[in-house]
Structure formats: C-alpha cells, structure tokens
Image (cartoon, rainbow, N blue to C red; front, side, top):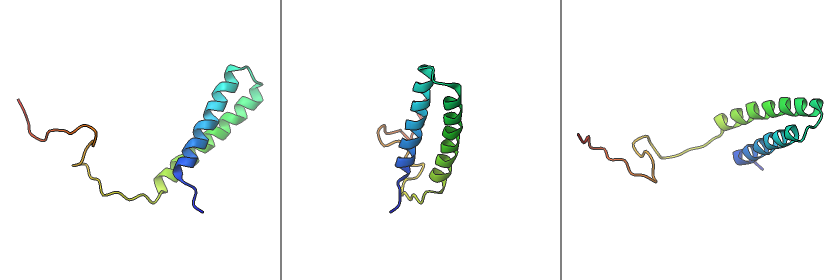
Length: 76
C-alpha cells in the first residue's frame, strides 16, 4: 500500500510542533537537540517525497486561480 504524501506532511508537522512545545516546556537540551535533528531529516525526506510524487494534473498557468477569476484584458 502506497503511503500518501499528505501522511508525510502531517507526520513532519506533528514532529515540529512537538519540538516547539517541548522547547517551551524546558525539556532537557539533549531531547530537543536530537528531536530537531530528526525534524530536519524529516523535512528533507518530505521535500524529496513531494518532488518525486507521481502527481498529474490537467491545469495550466492559463487557468490561474479558480477561486478568483482574473481578467485577461489589459485595462488602463
């Protein structure tokens, strides 16, 4: 079973939030330091997984934003 990219995004976000909370609660430096190193590795792995993901779309730059139509005419 293929793990979705969104799972990696959620896990990385959760890990970085845990690091932020533990640093605010004055945990020992060792735990925070090694968790931050692990978090950096997670971010690098996440970027790799997102870039090599087999994602296909039929959208182009001409479609622009779907929630706010952009006029193509040039008004002065």
